Image 1 (spheres, one colour):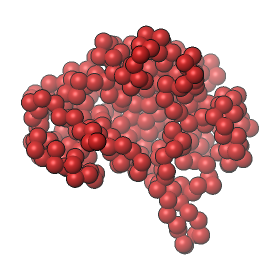
Image 2: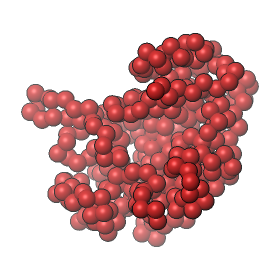
Image 3: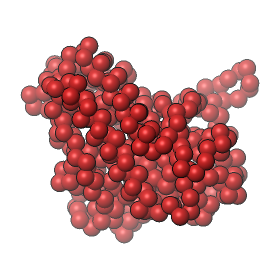
Image 4: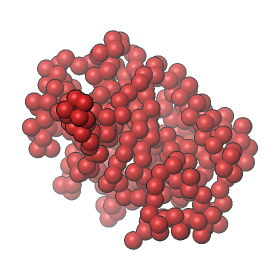
Length: 335
């Protein structure tokens, strides 16, 4: 069954030329706001890594990476799913100090993604990572960083609307924080996705915390790899999307595992075999800095600010014939 949703009476907010101008403005302006707010420096990052490095992100554990052989060096490479582990290693290798961090353009292919208005097999996001201290490895610091990111997003949106007055999306600066257990208790008869959207509809901007571990129902709110975020100190940032009439996740982030958290989560997830991988050995031995980090979806942020109905309006990807037909018939211009 096709999952494309067509908002009633939808019309593209801008023509194709001005859409491209607006996308460029959003990306340039947000990067400047974001880097300044979190004290980040831009770095170059890999498109692919070797499987044996253990640096690829396992996401929810079932997604298959795109792999290919490299005859010149006799190894198989994988297109990255994200740079969650690579960034932490880069902070150490590049000599970053406490309070400083990095960000980069991350491009990925997620071949097993289910396609709809928000999901594409092509992923583009700003991946970022920052060194913290044991004293700031807590929930209050996590919330401080979340508020800083929301501020950078809202500043960008307000500047965009000055440049393009025909755009109407308004974003709420006030962040409501809630745990996944609180959501389950509040909406016991809804699915995890339905809980998120119900809460964001009420609060407009929300950070949903503590993703990965099992709730009292015996099920996790959502999957999260055990070897990058600390499941007690992570979360997803949502904004209410008026065009789609639902909450939309813009960022997944968190304070990263320290040796104790990784040890615990590898066992809980049944992933003890990863302990011998180079990255995991370094972390368990305390050789990597304590960090906080995440990813911010570039196309989703553009969708949100432009009021677009489909992610294909702001990025070039490939779609099934039924999606193409539905979009054409309803005036949704796919790039």
